Amino acid sequence: MLSYRPGSSLAHRLDPRSKLLVQFGLAVAAVAYPTLPGVVGATVVGLAALAAARLSPLAVLRSYRVVVAVLALAPLVAGVALGPPWFRVEPALRSALYVGRVFPILFVSAAYLASTPVRETRAAVQRLVPGKPGQLLGVGMALVVRLFPLVLADVREVRDAIRARGGERRPVWVRARLLAVRSLARTLDRSDRLSLALRARCFAWNPTLPALVFARRDYPVAFFGLALALSPLARLLPL
Image (cartoon, rainbow, N blue to C red):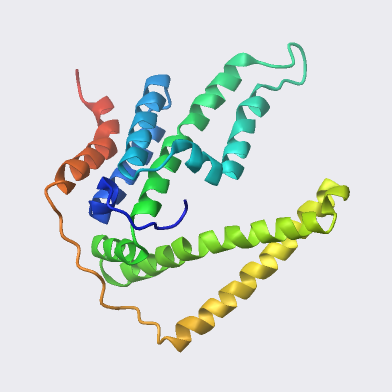
């Protein structure tokens, strides 16, 4: 779910630059409008992005289950009080609104990752940000997109190994320490192997990237993303 999957959906046929613009615009609009109508509107956009990539919202939430669990705790923690009435509803609801803005962004990000090859992402970034900064940013995004699913797989393997060795009978803090230390060791080892592989393959800062061409279907998507990004300016306009 967090990596590219070949397909023929509408999201697969869109230019990565238009998809990046929608992600950026939705993030700006979600932060600018922390209200119930704003969260509902952003959620509709996120669900539409999943539909365009032919992804299930439940499958995406399962992929982000750790993030979802952490976010679900935020309203509960915000509502807890140290004295009577011990739990305040208003801060909890306000926190839930802020948390609700994150889920549409996760949906759009999942749709982008599942429908966009890494090389096209790097090409889009380097065309949007010229020069060395664009090359550095493009390489960084490409490496993160490629490595993140592998790091998650390593964490799951370490967790399963701890359970197979009877780790569930140990205290929680011991299991957390083992999971963090072993996962970090695997990540560092994987980064060393990646560095060696890049040198062996004569890594280049300026490779021949795939050509990107805006089609007719990209223009309304890009315009929609731009409108989302500029939507906070509507508050500044006189009525």
